[in-house]
Length: 480
Image (cartoon, rainbow, N blue to C red; front, side, top):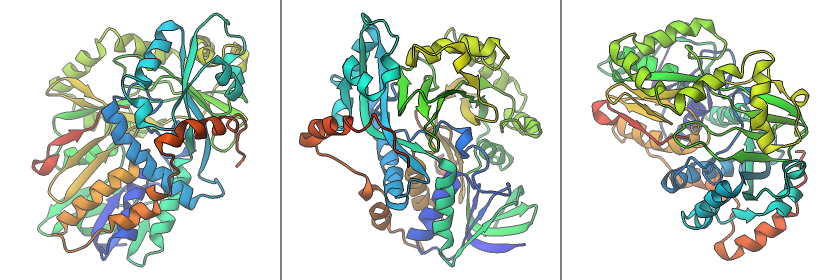
């Protein structure tokens, strides 16, 4: 097969699919194609077993600054609005309570400051401070077996969207394929991308594609392709594989714990699976791996391509991993994968959420977890956590670890504007229509109603619903 398109998107995960949806449904671009190397859409990190199924708003993620939360909030509301509008049968998501739990005087004080002094209560009108009694009403297992003298406080909200990002990806694709100007090719692996006078030629396992502009949304492989085209030479990846432990029917919704300072990764949390509320998942762990895809040894070579095996890369790794907080954390997470020893070492994290859990109640989830590519800046020898975007000549490379899925539509909006610029502003983007289909459907309360509505919803949440800039430099968002 071959073809000539205005826009070709490389990658059929949530990032590529959201851009396809945005450009296909809300612009008049003449011809758009999406290329995916796997035989199915959303087969890698967007698959429901390969991520924590969390829609991040920034309300209970204590490693977010208020500024970061404001940015992520809009992106999450775009996706939540899409789900409210297109998933009435809850095939792609469930909506349950979520909270961040503070245990002990120090953590309680930290949450109180966050809610009042730092402005999170004002930013999120549905977010409430709840005490031990209310925590027990919503999540009984969180209180059962805990020392009654221990102080407890949680910040809780009913906006706990648990998302099957794989099914959401497929929904975006289905919506886009309703348009006559869209082609989707699966089982089509990119072999090389060559810049031409008119744009780019993409050589694939199924033929050649010519396009005026392209967006590479291929996860960890995006930086690999960027480097082959001369971009991102001062960046390498620190691939982190996440894993989970499973237990039976312990939580009704999502319960986070407070983030350890200086760590780029979300703290261990527990939540009920999006499709089976009787399954409670605890995690994720964060293990350093020399691959770009979990469980695929063939991607070790791809990692080495990105790493570069040069002095700057090695020195950057050494500088990052020598941190007195990060190094022990990395070592502990390696231990969690060991038979027998791993579950025993992980158990205290589970017990912080559900104190009554015993070792025989948890088991390591086989086949769960994906790779989250953290960005390493070899100039500064630092870890630039979160999403990264490399913008070149008529080409964009997206590397989107968490919260990339949560902000996929917001990223797609940004990229759509950039694509229109690449195409000499010959086309138009109806962003108002996109917002009408998405964020305008997100349920809200105004500040005066927040407390009253929160009280009413708290009575219900105990039961689970069945249902670079132009010169080629890198821009990196804050961490998740």
